[in-house]
Image (cartoon, rainbow, N blue to C red; front, top):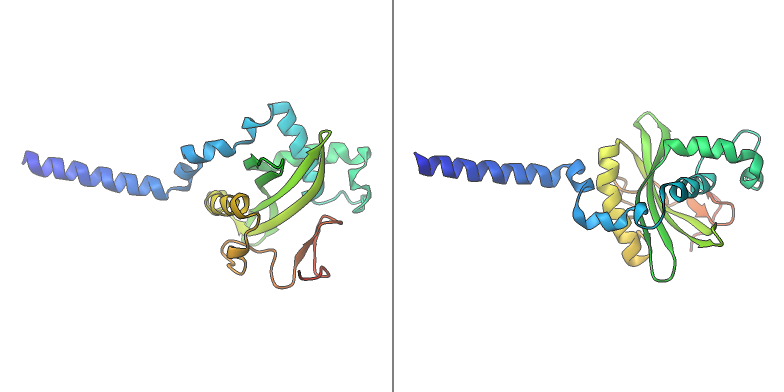
Length: 195
């Protein structure tokens, strides 16, 4: 009887371990990803300022802003307020001072209200330069976005791109065979030449 209880306990622990390993919430807490927290690089105030700066590149523009004018100070309050809807999930600065990010942003879709965005930029005198969105995920719930975001983020910082996942619609919505990121305009467009 004791032997059976011991075996049952071992089986229960194995099942619990398997469930925890597959749980996106558990994956969020993995020690190996703690090194990719923005708090390792910036204070809370710096992080909030940086996120508002990033949202100026990524987010929907105010109705009266253009691609060129959206960076003007009159629109700053809009982006600061809007940035509260974004979460920086993973962040990493490499030896060449490339700042890699993966964040969850609001989205408008019948499939859900959030999507993941990954990319990179540089900081010069506390100003963002060379900003680029490398990929956008499909619209999913946050659990799924954490799960696929970890895979895509690690691929991006290891290889500089996510080309291995292009065409996999469960991971990447853009870029695709038609839509590309225009680095000069900081927009996803259909008129960008394929490299």
